[in-house]
Image (cartoon, rainbow, N blue to C red; front, side, top):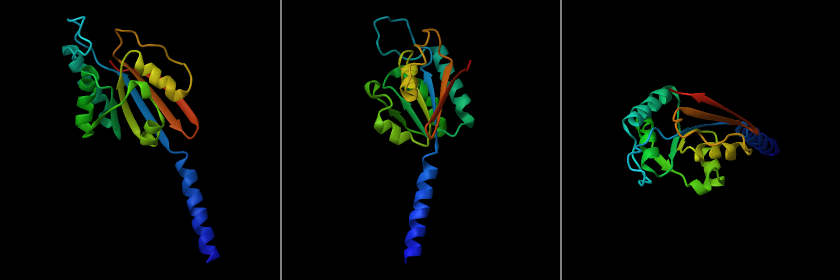
Length: 165
C-alpha cells in the first residue's frame, strides 16, 4: 500500500511540476480604424478602412490556435475582434479596463493562447501589467497595425511587437 501511495504522490508531484511550465501566449492589438466624423461620439464604430483591417486580423490569426478572445466593451474593439472570434467560433469576453491582468484573468488564461483587443493607451498598459514593468508607451493615434506578443513559460516572460499591415 505504501508503494502505491508513494507512486501516487510522485506522479501528482510530477504532473504539478509539468503544469508550472505551461506556456501562455497573449496577442494584444489596438482596435482598427474608427469613424472620426463625430468628435463628440465616445463610442464610434469602425470606418471602412477599419472594417477591412478587422478582416485582415482574422486572416492573420487564421493559423493561430486561439483559445479565447477578449475585448473592451466598445463598438470599435468588439467590431475589431468579431471577424477573428467568428472564424474561431469563440465568444468575445469583455474585460474591465480597471482590472487588467488581475488574478481572475491570469487564472482563466493560464496555458492558453489569447487575443486581447484594446485601445491606444490600454494595450501597452496591459502588456506592461503582464510583464510587471513599464516597457511600452501609448500607441500613436494613427497606428492600428501593431501587434504585441507576450509569451509566458513558468516565470519567464518575453515580449515583442510586430507590424501587421
